[in-house]
Amino acid sequence: MAQRNQIRGNTLIPLTDHFGFGLPGADGSEDSSTGARIIAVNGNPNVGAIPAPKGSLALDYATPALWVNTDGAATWVTAGSSSSDLLLWDREVPVTGQGGNTRTTDFRPPRDITISAIRLYALTAPTTVGTYTFAAEGDGNNLLNAATFDLTSLVNDTLTAMTLTLTTADLNIDANDLVRFTFASNNPDLAGSGILLLVDWYGR
Image (cartoon, rainbow, N blue to C red; front, side, top):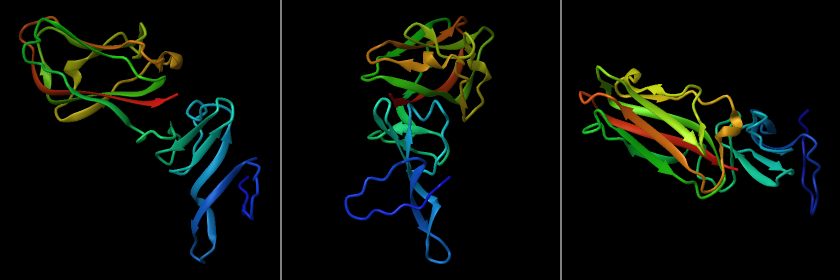
């Protein structure tokens, strides 16, 4: 149950539920249900899908760590991160010249991370009489819920989110571990343009 809290002098407030920073209500009084909150959590709040108003803080006393809610729902990033969607890449994947070939692109994160989304965009969706597939792996583990994604199923000028693996532990990538994305074509007639790969993550 939410409780109204006041700070008087050097006071330590027990966070048995949350400490609310309310916005003014219609009668001018503080409404703690509308503002940011400070809550205490025992671990990563993303794991428990803990909802809170946007801008709320979660004090993780197990790690310890400080988390910030970025969407008014249940998405949290570690304090100091720039946004809920930490855009690691906004990288174009050239289609021209790839027909019949495989292209890989790699990165090694500078810190421990959790991948929260992998998305693909095509200005002009790929076409081929053969196959054109996408695969993603982190530290040797498949990051998708299937072995590959059919890139010819992309829609023109549309951002498509990949369905990630249900093995959530595989989405945790340690600093300097290899993350590899593979675009594989088996026919030289491959056509398409403006393919972008976007990866979202938050620090652990």
